[in-house]
Every structure is written in C-alpha cells, then in structure tokens.
Amino acid sequence: MAATETPASTGAPAVLQTVDRALQVMLTFTEQRPEWGVSELARHHGWDKAVVQRLLHTLAARGFLLCDDTTRRYRPGPALSRLARVGEHSGVLASLARPVLARLLRETGESVVLNVPHGGSYRCKAAVDGTGPVRYTAIIGAVMPGHAGASGHTLFAHRPEREIRQMFGPATLTRFNDRTLTDVDTLLACYARVRADGHCVSHGEYDEAVTAVSAPVFQGDGVAASLTVIGPSHRVGRATDTLVTLVRAGAAEITSALGG
Image (tube, rainbow, N blue to C red):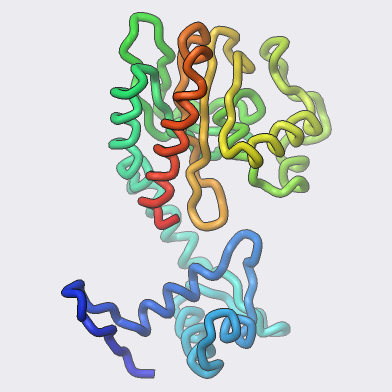
C-alpha cells in the first residue's frame, strides 16, 4: 500500500492518503464502539478489506491498537493513553479555551470557568474572574463535588447510567444545602433534562448565593469539559436566557477547535 497524496487543487497542502486513512480508523473507535473487526471497519469506511487489514496491523505494531488473539477484534492500545497524558499536561485544552473564556468575560462581566472530569468530581482547568465587586472566584486545579451544580451535571449527563451509579454509589450524597441533589435517581432525572436541553442552569446547589449556566464541550463522542458562566444569583439568575445562548456558542467553538 503505497503512500499517496491527494491533489493539491485548492492550493492547500497535500494530504498523505495512507496517513489520513489511518487517522480515520483511529477516530472510528469511540466510547460507544471501542472494538472493531477488520470486515466491520472495511464496510463502515467503504474500503478494501486488505487495505484495512494492513492499516490495523501497522497501528497495532506501534501500540496504537491491540488485537485480541481469540476474537481478532481491535481496540485502543497503550500508545493512545500515553498521548492522552501528553495532551493533558501540555495544556492544549486550556489554550484552545482561553480566547473563548476571555470573550465571554467581556460579553457577560461574570466569571467563566472550564472544568474537566476528576473521578466523581470535577477540576477547574481554566478560569477568568468576573469584573464586578461581588463575583465568583475560581481556583485553577480546585476539585469540586460532581453532584452539586451545573458544571458537574453538564460533564456527567452523557455518561451511561451504569457508570453514573458506580461513580456516585448507593449512599446518600453530601448535602450542602436544601437545593443539593443527594441521590442518584434525582441526578439521572437531571441529566436527562441536560441532554434534552443541551445545557444546564443551577441555582445554589453548592453555594446558595451562586447561579451557574453550563454547556458541554465535546471531544469525539464524549464530554471533555464543561464551559460555565457563574456568578451571584441576583445577576446571573436574571440573565440566564442570554447566558445560555452565549455559553452554548462558546462551548460549540471549543468543541470545533478540538475536532468535534
């Protein structure tokens, strides 16, 4: 299978077809479909089976895929985990998000936070503080409870129910005030609304004085982060309709930058 280039008819840099196909193969593996056989991939992409076999064999030889000796099906390999760690430590996500955070700050005057999953909690990856004398201040690296507030709901709403139940367990979740969601069934009902709406608004579930508007940032088939505008309830609560539009647009922009 010789490496070929697509014609540079548009003046854009030529693309190596073999490399492009290998990358398309890797992007076919998702959380919902983590394993593929040779014939399945060939049918999915409309490629010759022998071509797909050589692509998979090459990717497996470099550790990007693993082949089950019994089923002959392929799944992601250890090289991907290593690259994921590199991506996490290189700050790519935060770098891509910072212009969006800065724009939302100018548009809203409120604090803007990018959070990422951290087990059953979430961690602040990037943030800008609001401009008013009364504002919410986020600390980079701070870990917050995943069951309390819009950021966590947005991050976990697209996870499978079985995973949610394992993550939060059968015990009553910590109650921070009367608005905190403290059982998994209530969380699952909230998550269904988040999936249907495409965003989440929370009023004082963790801090009674705070309202938050959050939207998911997707990468592949999963949620990589949540983008949240957060501030005093007396201001954010009155502006939720406008903020929902702005936050969803910002999250979509970051999703696009991540290749979504």
